[in-house]
Length: 369
Image (cartoon, rainbow, N blue to C red; front, top):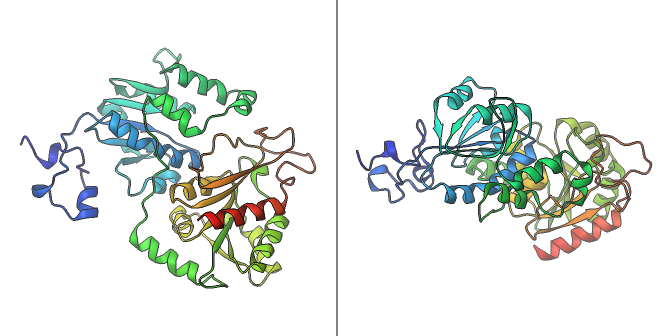
């Protein structure tokens, strides 16, 4: 039993491993066998965009902890983000998650959240080493390094957030002590690709021409992250006049806004992905350029290697990584990056971003694709 599938780092317990799935390789002939070491636990619960961009650390962490299987605890709504990745995913709400933390001895526990439930999970799990943040048995707060402390201080101070010059990925790379980050990881199923290809083709007003998607959602935490609907209408008209295909992407929460926009122009199309994140990702994989605020779709498009025009007002543009495949258009109002959940100023920071500036950025990105 020295070299057996049961002690292989890639063994998935009740499912075929990635090499069997992707390459059809059976255990008896596999050259990827690696002895299983103690597991590594990642705790990253929310928000959805943060969970997705944290996958950029996985390759560096696997290099740091060779042979270790990786387990990831997250909230149930974030589970689709981790589909088809070589990690065991445990929803926070499942009973098996508590068993996981209480039963196993981990090689490392990596918690990059400061929410109480994440801190308690990291503190209760037994591990040879811990990275990030946790609660000590006596109730004190633990952190792994000066880099971790700086991030904790930054998340507790809007002033320090505004002065930050590093991307989220750069900061987490320092905290984890790894030498490599990639774009966020995302692997679509063949069926997801087939569905998206058919769906997007049916939306094209100008077959064979460039495709631009306008993501009109922005979540509920910061209401002012969303560009105004009249701006989207004017941008869509400009793009259609250039015979550039354009359609809206929206979820259930934006159905009212989408309806108003669709009524305003018969050539404007839309895809409602509802609450299905995998549909959102599959559609994004079919486009050339995405126009979006600082939200999950931005990080998904980055994972898929798409060109991005990203709009920023109340949140930090420095933390977002576009990997050289896009432009950030940042509001010029002095109170930007306020991190206020709502704002009564008129015009607000996102209203200040002109359509002409976004339109020009889209055209530049289309030339570079």
